[in-house]
Length: 248
Image (tube, rainbow, N blue to C red; front, side, top):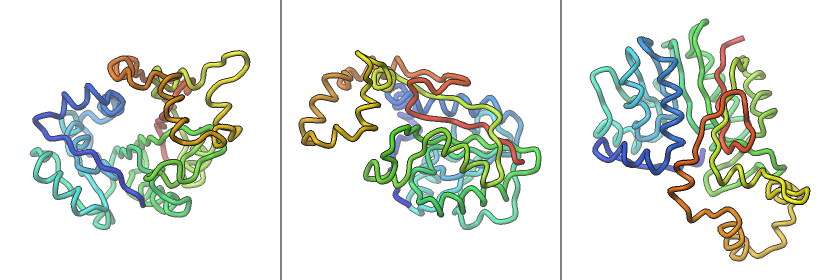
C-alpha cells in the first residue's frame, strides 16, 4: 500500500481544515451517523479525523498499518474516548459504525478486497460503513499519482463494495470549482473527455501543468476552498465519492 500523510496538530487543526475543506466535509458527514455509537476509523492515519469523531461518538478506535502514524496520533489526538491501534490487532471486535476515508486508492485490487472483507468482519449486522475514494471516470485508473495505485469509477466502486458483502444505501459527491470546470462542456468537449481520450499525453508534462493551471485557475486557492461542496445523491462535477453502506 502506498501512503501519503498530512500532519496537522491539535493546535492548528481547524485552521488547516479551512484550507482543505473536503476533509471537514467528510467528518461533518460522519458526525451525523455516530452519536452515542462505538465506532472504528480504519486507516486513520495520524488520527485527526478520529479525534474529530470523538466529539460525537461514544467511543472511537483508530486503526492503521503505520507505526509512525499511530505514534503521531497517540502524541497529538487522543481523547478519553479515543484510542489508536495497529490494524493487525483488529480481530474479533465489532462496531456499530466504521469509517474509512481515502484508503482503497492506495491498494491493489486484491489488497482492496482483503481490506473490505476485514471491515465487513468488524461491522455488526446492523452497522453502517462510510467509505470514500477519489472519483475517476477516465480509463486511466492505475498509478494515477505517486500514491494512488488504483482509482475507481462510481460503477467500479459500487461493484467492488457489493462483491465484498456491502450494499450502497446513499451516495455523496464532493466537488469544487476545479472539478466542476473539468466536467463542464465547451463546444462539445470537456477537459475530462480529453483526459479520457489520452490526447493530453501528447503534450509535454511541463506544458500540461501550465495549461491546466491557466484553464482551471488552480492558483486561486481561496476560491477553490470556498467552492467545496458536499452533494447528496449526485456525483456531477465531483472529485470524491462517498458511499454509505450496510452489510447485505
